[in-house]
Every structure is written in C-alpha cells, then in structure tokens.
Amino acid sequence: MEIQFQRKPRVLCLHGFRTSAEILRKQIQRGSEPVLRKLDLVFIDAPFPARGRSDIEGLFDPPYYEWFQSSKGFTEYYNFDECLAYLEDYMMKHGPFDGLLGFSQFCKLNNEGKENGEKDFLKEPGIALLESFQDPFVIYHPNGHVVPRLDDKGEETLLRFVKKIEKLQLHEG
Image (cartoon, rainbow, N blue to C red):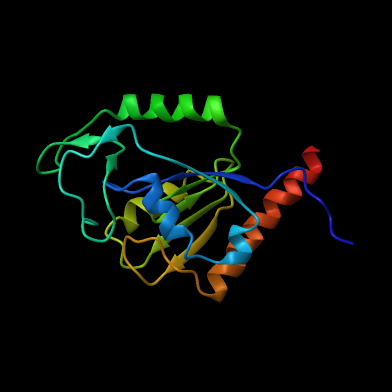
C-alpha cells in the first residue's frame, strides 16, 4: 500500500550568478526523473539585471540576473539587504517551502542538505555554510561550480532527503 502525501515537497530554486530561473530549470531537467517527480520545484529570477558578461553566454540565451551586485574586481558587494528583502517577500507571498536549491548547493530551509562540487572554487565557503545546519544531507560531486548530474549514490542520498521531508509531512498532517 502506497502512502499518499498531502503535497510534494516544495523547493525554492535560486539560479547562479548572471544566469536565470529558466536556465536553472533547463539544467535541472537533465536530472534524475525519479527525484524530480517527487518535488514541486519553484524557480525565480534574481532581483537585479546582470551588469556584466555572463559565463554562460553562447550556451544559454539572455536575460541574465544577479542576486547581488559587486565592484568590477568583485572586491566589494552591494545590495545584500535588498536581495534578502526580495527573497523574504517572495517566500512570504508564495511559501511555505520545504527546501532551497541554489546553484551548486542544495540547502533545506529546515536544516537539511547541500550539494558541493569537489572542484568548486566556492567549496570552502559552502562547507562553512554546513555549520548552520543540523544533521545536513550532503551530496559531493566531482565537478566544479556547476549543476551536477547525480550518480547513483547522489540520487540515493537525495531520495533519502525527499523521504525525510515526506515523513515530516506525515507527522504534521
């Protein structure tokens, strides 16, 4: 007998630097069908139009967006407060969300999981972020700062994550 859940776990999906919600949607659609079928993925664009060249030009069409803006040499960052207010407003209007998927990282809002590439130039800050979470699910992949295709082990870990959310829903319902 298969248990029917109230709803699929809702995951807010945040694209990478100078990309877009549509680009992340296309990248994720290459993923594991058994996992994708179990999630309600919600994609949003960052609040700021890109103010520079995107690393994905030629691979994906514009428009491109940024979550924050920075100085030319990326030594100073701006607009964090506006970005946080934008995200908070979106989550208040369109939530609740069970998880957060970011470009090259998967973090559940209720302290659950994260993806991190072994060759990712942002690996160390991502590992430091894990300290903010209680009992996180972590999926490492051998690539850099990319949306990975999961191997069998990564897919199994992600399915365990989804089952944990479903179990929490049973106790809440």
